[in-house]
Length: 420
Image (cartoon, rainbow, N blue to C red):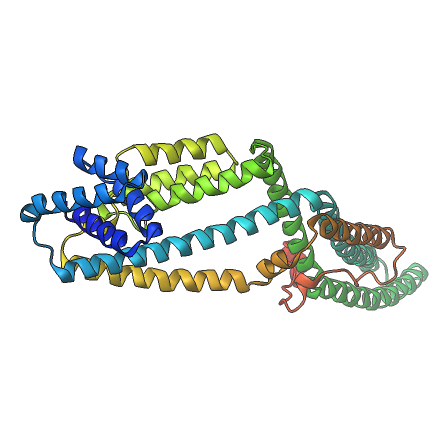
């Protein structure tokens, strides 16, 4: 009742001031209240611009109901107004953040859908090149290890022959001709063993160097990261395609309707401004609303909005709270929320990604230019993979620059660990 009388007083003043704009605004606000037949008659006369009759009935209505109005604490009223202003500011910030997030989300989706196939080729080729380079180092180590094993096997055979010679010499008479011949063969074997041991030691050093080159080479880390990048992007690409297929196709007019309906619905149920006892319910509705917007389901967003407009709705904190202490606490909390949200919006709008998005004048041309660049990169990487490009390390790997290079895992075989 108090709000009704205040608005009628305001209309009365505006009639005397001949301010039709404020009268029209107050008529709209009065219609949102629960009105009796007398007020409805006043509203009808105002809409028909019968201001003299409306003024008379307003005076009569106010005089009849003034004695029934409850006392309103001025401090309570001022706090409620302050909170209402802050709620509107918070709503505006939420809308701005949602629009920024939506712009980034939609751009990323367009980027992936337009360039996903060629980006996927680039990432796969990068991983293959690193794998090829890593395999070459592994093959070098395996080859040197095989050569070492072969020399070691030959040495063991020579040592076995030497042992046989020693046993045979033990059986012969030391001053016989046979002993002389066997002893000569024995000495020759010893010389060959010394040479073979020297050869084995040199081979071991070569294999050890090959292993160290493999273990310390950053290519292993490059390969692991490139493989992960390729796998992650492939999953994201497939997810984006699936989500795009599930979205409803809308024309520009329908997209504008979607944006407007979503914004109106957010104002009616955003968890940041509803009373505390209804926050959980508001979160549920906001989740459903966000999902509908994401899939561009205009009928669903409009249905949620209509339900919010025609149903009981949510009590806004500035309307529901009638305690000055609680209002002060709520004002402090919303001010803090506003500060946090302003900081988040600033980070988003100042980010390189967002600045790139807002600077693009022609998206189609932008994506065409990028696709051409990626296509050229695919050709170059294919040449590298085939060995046509001598500068195989000159890959477009800016994401790798400045990163620490981790060594590859050690060879599991304890034998080779100790040998090399």
